Length: 213
Image: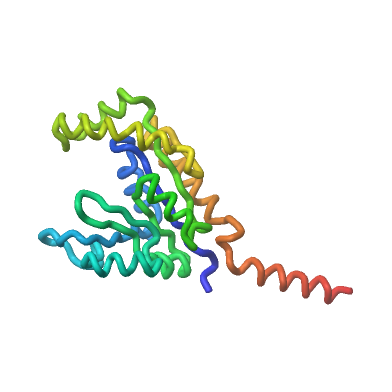
């Protein structure tokens, strides 16, 4: 048995708040942290491999897994299904490895309500201001003005669900936010429920105490 159970670490934010950068930094900080591999019904793109970028499933296979409760969360996006298979996540956390999820608030709720939800840690990343959020999207240089406008419209809906999360960080300084994120993860790893060997240790202490009498 592993000394501790892994966490399901959920990171959410509006686009441009810094979630992807923080996720990369978190994984660089701890090489044992794994990124959850999603399942999808869309066709593989050139260079993508089953089990590396995604688990590629037919629509029937996907729906069967949902019906059997084998998806921690799932959604229908732009004509395709996406979801997080429970099996690989369960294996990882039982082996003491944390799994990182990049999902929205709806995914957070589904994971929280799953049978693995007691091991979930959810963190929402807020921008320091809306003008700064737009500036970051424009600075990235990845999107057209039309796409940026759509992202900005969607951002308030995402921000409005901040109350679902265990922790909320305002990313006004990337380095400082990274340190806060590491502190949260380090502390949450020590939760009683994450330490399966504690009960056995306490039982040993009890036997030793009774042996003194």
